[in-house]
Image (cartoon, rainbow, N blue to C red; front, top):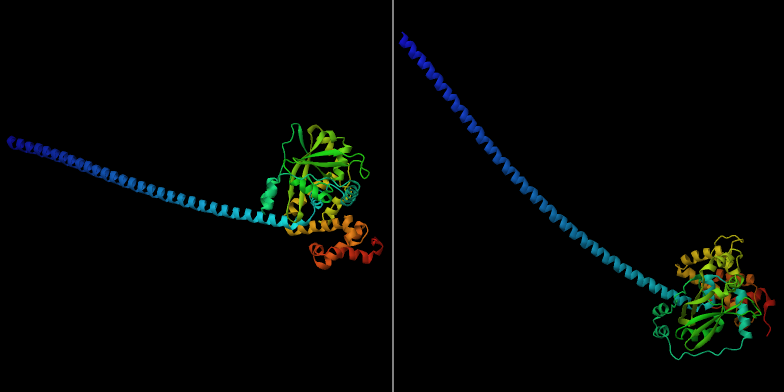
Length: 410
C-alpha cells in the first residue's frame, strides 16, 4: 500500500517537473519569438528609416535642382529684362537727344536777346532794346579781333555735329575760394546788335569774361558792360540785364563779384548763345538776395506769367516771380511745340522793338499794348505764332491800318 502511494507521489512529482520544464521551454520559446519579432521590427524600422532617408535625400536633391533651375531661369530672365531696359533706355536717350537737336534747330532763329529774356526774365525787354540800340548808335564801330585759330567747338559745328558742338561749348571755370554763385545762367543784353563781335569771341580760344562799370552811360547810370576776352583780344559783347546791374550797384557789391562764362555757342541759322553767371563773396550773398525782395515785378515777368496764364499778384516780389518762372519754364520746355510758340512770340515782339526792323517796316515805335493786340489777332486768324512769323510784315500792316499815325515818314 505504502509502495503504491510512493509510486503515485513520485509520478506526481515527475508530472510537476515535466510540467515545469514544459512551461520553461514555452517561456523560452516565447522569448525567442519575441526577440525574433523585435529583431524583425528593428530591421523593418531600419529599412523604413533608410528608405525615408533616401526619399528625403532624393526630394532635397530634386528641390535643389529645381531651385537651381529656377534661379538660373530667373537670372536669365532678369538679364534679358536688363538688356531690354538698356536697349530701351539707349533708344530713349537717342530719341531725346534727337528731339533736343531738332528743338535747338527750331529755336535757332531766335536771337540771343530773346533767349536771355525767355530763360531768365532778368530785364525789361523794351527798355533794354532801346538802350542797346541807342548805345550802338553812339559808340564807334568796334574793331573786331579775328582769331588766328579756331577752337574745337567751331570745328565740330563746321563738320555739322551740332550736338557735340553744343556740349563742347560749356566753360564753367572753377569758382574762386570764398565765393559762390549769386545769379544763375543769364544772357547778355544787346548781343543781337553785336553779332559779328559775338561770333569772333565764340570762335576764339581760352575765352573768359570781365565786367566793367559804365557810370557815364547816358541811358543807364547803373550800366555794367560785359567784355569777352580771348587769345586774339577783347570783345565788347553787351551789358548785364538792367535789373541785374541795378541789384549789383544798389547793394554796392560790384567789387565783390565777377562774371563766370557758362557757354559760348554758335548754332545753325546764325543762332548765338552766350550765357554767364554772377559769382560773389559768400558773406555778401544774403545782402545781395535781400534786395530782390524789395523790387516789384518788371514787364518781362508780367508778360511771361500772363502769356502762360499763371495767376499772380501785382505785389509779387521779383525773387518770388523768378522762382515761379524758373519752376514753370523747366516743365514748359518739355513741350517743344509750345515752347517754340513762346520763343516765336518773343521774336515777333523783338522785331517791333528793333529800330532797324521798324524802319524796314516803315513804322514808328509801337506801344506794347498795340503790338500785342495786333500779334494776337493775327495768331487767332492764322492759328499759330509760327504762321505769323512767316510774314512778320503783316503785323506792321495790321497796326498801320488801325493806327496810321504810327507811319514812319522818312
